[in-house]
Image (tube, rainbow, N blue to C red; front, side, top):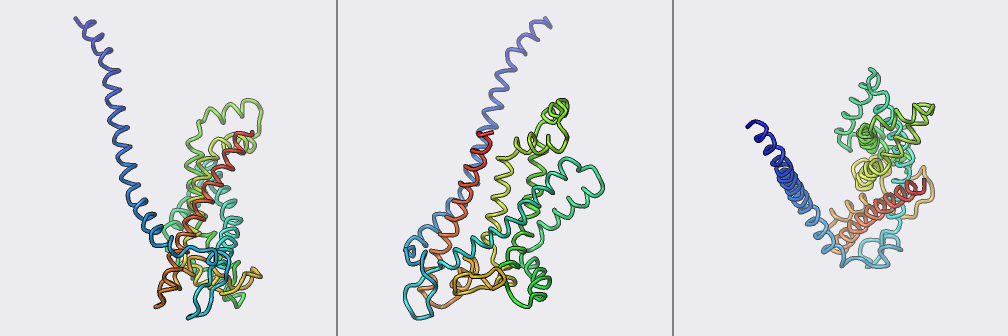
Length: 290
């Protein structure tokens, strides 16, 4: 009797698993769709409001004085790329290095202090970071500059890159590390050539999240890079950026500037999307090539 009952349970168990799997998959799909609703609504709103203001002049010309029609934000587009590039040169290598240290040597007291500091830094308002860099660099240099803006954005990127790298490296199976070490590969090389390579697509996603945040920050740039109506010519001078330009135009009483602000917001979203796609393609191409 017991053997018959056990056989029935074995037959029913796969069916139960399939039902559970179907329910969980359905719930995940519903949760994903619910999360996409506000995102798609926001994108639709920006596209509808900004598409009418898009023009070649907006992408290629400098801003014009109040009262003159036309003009563009070409200097702000270039300035945003410069600031994000500076921030990436500082924040991404330092963040990935910190994440590797936390994942591979995270049981020490120093690692716990670094992890706690990263968590605290991720919750600090961006305007506080801007004020800190203002006191550290702008006051010292006695002028606003692109370098100060890049440092402020790098500080904002650092905790996101570090913590995402740490968590993704922890997901790499321990057997891969052990296999590399068993072949006589030094630990540092196993980490860089095996573990880091395996987690590279996920790390790229975390990096692009940090880049997207940095590209859209306004408050720290008001204290560091300020703004400019001209082409960027030096890294130790004020520089224009799309977030600050959008903020300036949005609070103005001029309808033409409001139209350009919406168009600039659409351009900023497109830039972030292009950077994300390019980074994913680059990482996948490099991974497949190896």
